[in-house]
Length: 116
Image 1 (cartoon, rainbow, N blue to C red):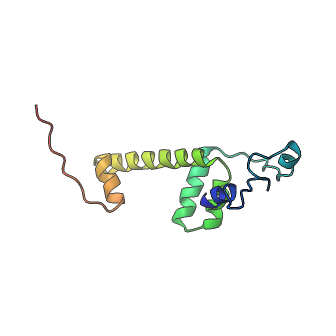
Image 2 (image 1 turned 180 degrees about the vertical axis):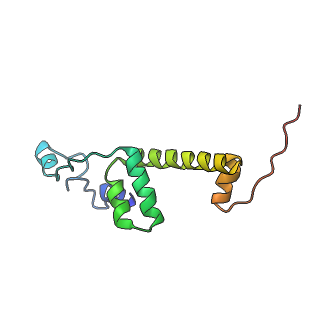
Image 3 (image 1 turned 135 degrees about the vertical axis):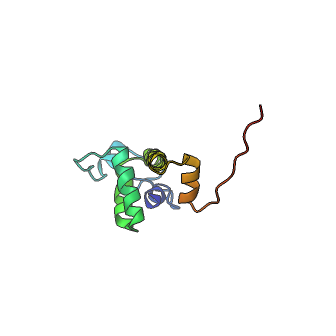
């Protein structure tokens, strides 16, 4: 994902089609390689990105990051994390806060009961 972002904002000011930012023409836009016929949704991209990250497969991470926009991938990863924590909390019979903190190796915070 970060390589894709870096390629958009290169130091030489050239973006996607190799043109200076804001100077794209229809001809330059047509020079872009055609998109793959297979379309991927943001949840598919997020699942692939996270599983590749867990396997330390940077090529697969870059591939999944190219399927959707960086914003969509970020949303998908966030949604995947939320669903994973909720499911683990249900399985363990613990609070989502305790599960999230345990996954990140953070100490469990004792919450004081609200005063009446």
